[in-house]
Amino acid sequence: MICFNFDPTHRDDQTVAALQAWNQGISDENRLLKYSKMVCSPFVFFRGTNHLFWRDFAHHPKLELFGNEQTKIWIQGDLHAENFGSFHNDEDEIVYDLNDFDEAVVADYQYDIWRMAISIVLVARQHKDFKKKDIEEFIERFCTGYLGTIAAYCDSEAELEMEFTAKNTYGKLDDFLKDVEENESRWDMLDKWTDVKDGDRYYDLSSDKLAAVTDAERAEILAQMPEYGKTLTGKLDYAPDYFRVKDIARRLLAGTGSLGVPRFYVVIEGDDDHHKYDCILDVKYQGKPTPYKYLGKDFQKAYDQQFKNDAQRQAIAYKALVKNTDDHLGWMKLGSEYYSVRERSPYKEAFPLDTLTSKKRFKKLAEQWGKILATSHSRADTDAIGSTIDHSFDTAVHQLTHDKQKEFCHLVQTVAFTYAAQTKLDWQAFKSAHPTLTCLE
Image (cartoon, rainbow, N blue to C red; front, side):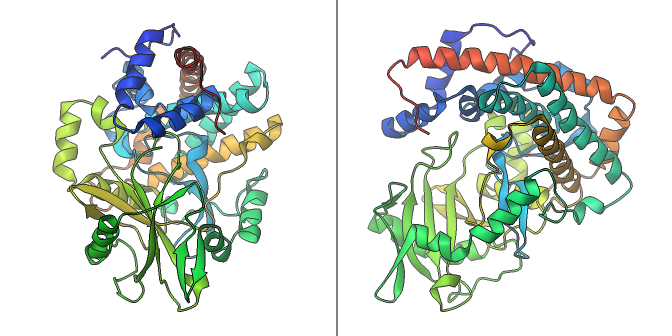
């Protein structure tokens, strides 16, 4: 495997071939939709090509500068600015945190740092033509936010109690969370996706984001609900009345990198007989995470021994990285494949990146991205149920970085700028190979 050498090059044929190979398993229709999103900008292309990142950076020698066996931790695995977001936790608080764990694995923390920093460059260039010096400052704030938070957690378990809400965030992130709480609700979510007919709730299949399931799919999901109940990881116990299924639909057009992955929305009774208390369960196919292909045979062997299936791994990662996780979190088997199950939060929103038009606003959010990521990583060394992690992650990282913060930040900036340039070249090659594609926002 050839690692990225910080020298962006034209590799047009290689990029196009890699994309064709990676996406050959999805339907022609979904591939067209996915590609029509990816053509919009280098940032969206980056979101849809996590496999290129892992191919280029797996086992990169520069990881050894600030990493070792003690700095391996649960990582998000596909980190970028759109994989932070708001949602409600199991205490019904609106929080801002990591919100996608399909690619999560135990690996060196710097993979998340590097990938997020690359996305900062791409976001900054997509929504406003910031100067390079400005973007360097954004990445510096991200790094110092991360390392400062890591240092604060040494010899402490404060990370296990920390959550990011409207009360302790700043620089427009607090306003965003207040707006989400004020303007979103379970009722609004249910009204968006469903209708009430003959005293019960059904999906509105006029939406282009939903499709009917077959009788066989419906019967199989209904039959597997009690088995899913045995996998619940939170405070909920499986109760047939609570988990009574009202309707099932196939979810379409979701995501970018995962577009085309089989997915279902299942509406259940929930806490109360009133319709406003119904819940929507997001049932999503989980295959091997992208890093599995690139991190080598030893990694694959350890992974296969540790996890019963890929959906279980996703649930363990979610529990490790996020405090007060969804009580509906679990998994089910459909056919020969495994699917994660979690509640679709009524408060699921992404921060509007197009509002990051001033240096001050961008720096404050970048700093908080670093703090949130450090908190997630730090809590995963002691709270990862089912994990074999037994070392103090934050202490290990602090020992490697406390007197080398400038060098750490410089490396991250180098990775971010050079790979953002490589991403733009790859995106241009992708566009040239598909000249008839038009952007699908």
